[in-house]
Image 1 (cartoon, rainbow over the protein chains, first blue to last red):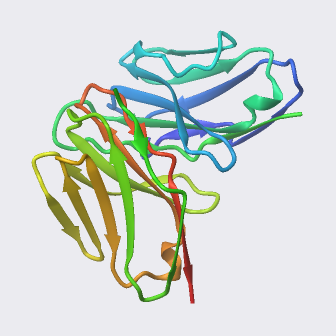
Image 2 (cartoon, rainbow over the protein chains, first blue to last red):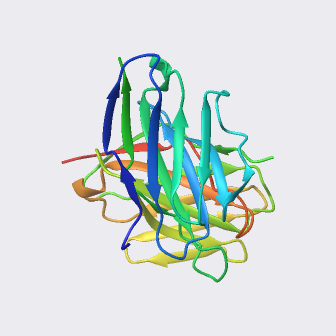
Length: 115
Length: 111
């Protein structure tokens, strides 16, 4: 697609439920990142994919968080048994790996509210 | 290790210059970026600089890089109300490395 697409754009869920967030990166971009932005906070790194593998998942806050990427394209971030502190905007970005253009293109984010 | 530090808030008058600062700790960072986030919007790349450069100018934007002090700054000339946003600096050691962001600074432009 023309840009990074995230769905849903907004999600309200009850505490304890599982949620899945989706990211469609720009076609051909092999690197994909997930970040979390809480109200008034900066961007917190969660996980990074190179192709389908995740060289760095050090930012995942707990074992309730997991992510996968299939076909070197779409990625899903799953949060199990959601808690109120999980409420945040979840941002996805993709970058081409090689070449001089190393810009990270961001999606519009998914605003997750846990009630 | 990687850590990017920024102050939190800056207020300037319309027409003045704004200078936003950032300190990073990974001396191997090859790519350094400035991103802008307008209220309710996603992040937009403003400009970037490679570590083999000291300065880059792009219209009203000037990026200065001091590798010795690991200090990056963004100067916005003739600041406009449309420049009001959160500005993030970010670093990446190489093309295959993760992108690390600072906490962001909120720029408020008053008439």
